[in-house]
Length: 155
Image (cartoon, rainbow, N blue to C red; front, side):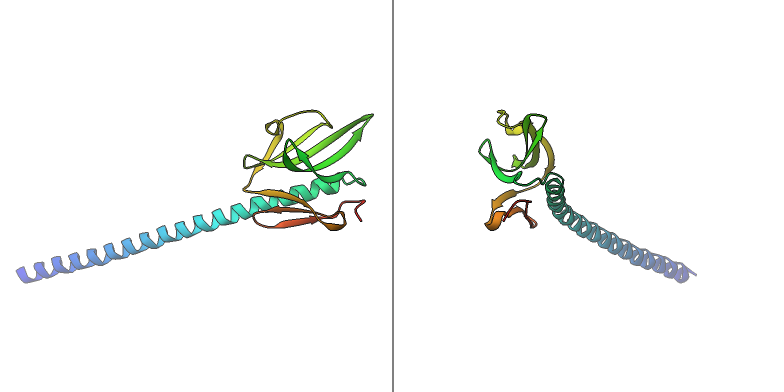
């Protein structure tokens, strides 16, 4: 009878050890999966923000594309995509630029002196550049890709 009790205790200990190994294995797989998921989400989010900025700029260009009104300009020493609009008798300028890690938009009367931080911050991204290329086209680039704009009135 003593042998039978010892055998059951040994069987119980063996089952508990197997269960513990299984539980630790499941926990490790879950932690690894969560880590992979977080990394993939971060990568996707970074690219998504860059694509969102390009889409935003594309929409702004299409909504404000009067002949000759879209161009690469300079705002307080920062390259900017500029849109000129006339309201009444006054010429206004919208500037989209990258400053301090953010994409900003600033609507102002053209020639009015303002600072880059006066604009409305749109989205935080790593880089945004504007480049005049041949035939009046403009290349807008972020870390994830680029957009080629052909404004109305370009050759």
